[in-house]
Length: 201
Image (cartoon, rainbow, N blue to C red; front, top):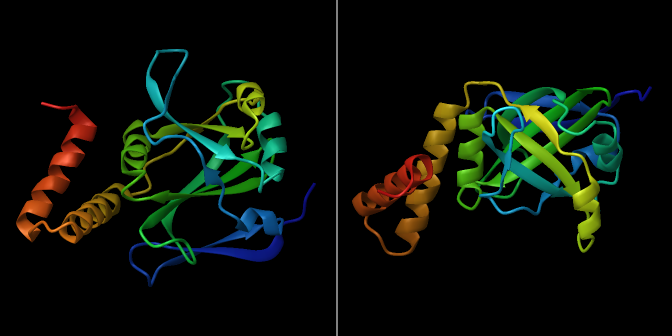
């Protein structure tokens, strides 16, 4: 059994006065995994054909994750603890999902999502309350095809309201940077979010 070392991975909520620290077993766990799938990618859940967001991550810089995926049988629901937040040291304009796998393997996985680029993906995860994870290595398609998909339940952690504010703020700033007025930028932000959630009118 691996001993949890006192190395810390700090995260902060939108209210920067509130900080949460995660213990890690190895320096590798302090590295966020690289997301290589398109934000709109989904996977069909076998029992009811429901479409669930799929996040494919490159394990080349996180070889410890190969053993994580190998420890789960196909379609297994991972036993995890979840926390959304804004990670210290993360790129600007991102939110981080911390996934602490508890069994059968203890592992910390951090996913940095770009608020604008991955907005539809984060929105989908929060609405579905789950996601599928799959590992691959860059340039090696066979690895992705052979790796097991791990289903991760993402419970309500009271992040939805914070996410709504962050998403609108980032979309508004992007539109204003392209020359839109504040009023028009807010309209464009709301319209983008509406299309994600209901489809085009």
